[in-house]
Length: 332
Image (cartoon, rainbow, N blue to C red):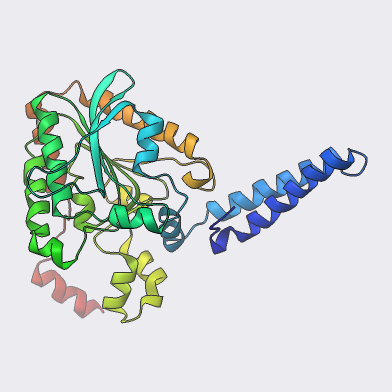
């Protein structure tokens, strides 16, 4: 497979051997290559994959989340939703191609689906700005969310961005203000809001469309206040410390679920969503339908209150009285 990650190499080698054996069997017959040999290699391949993907480090999961063949927002929209009609522009400045959105159907349920979109090659990445939205992208997203709110249509947000675009133009057009307004206004939406981190969930760029009643994350995605590279550059003054930073940030799906920062982990096919995009889409669709079903029974007031309390609970901490600290020092 193209774009193989370093830790995937042992499995790739076995895959290539298996393909060669199957091709030989077709060309030369079973007398040369027996079914027993093929089944033995298949078992070895399965064991190797299990060993690799059941013990991934945080940094390896970051690499999978960034894999260039991983399904992106529009890939999931194509496979999960029907009758998607993309809407454009923020009605103030321009249309941001890094942020896509429009009305669609999730089975029979009309929804507004919004998400950040990356590109597959250099040309498309320039067009999509590498999935990093400008202020107009967040203002477009808010316009679509308010339109959905007006017509009582649930909102589904698909997050896959390294972060909001930090360039001069974005600062001139007030990127921080546009994200802040989204955070404020999303708390007031009267319809169910579901957010799914499908790849990278980078800082305020992700949170700008991520204030939801249900926040789910795919198994090999990550959600973080800063990238591992950025953290390593600040704390260790060395970007090669990114693997160490990834572990320290606790950004994997399991860590986030343990901390109560996400509500659900959406499983991926073995070896990651990029190995089987169709199955990955079906697993995400199943999770979205279940979440939407549970939220549709709630009133507008319940949805608003639940969303507010959910995010108010983020970042809990406990204070230790000075007397307790002193006793702890004495014991040491």
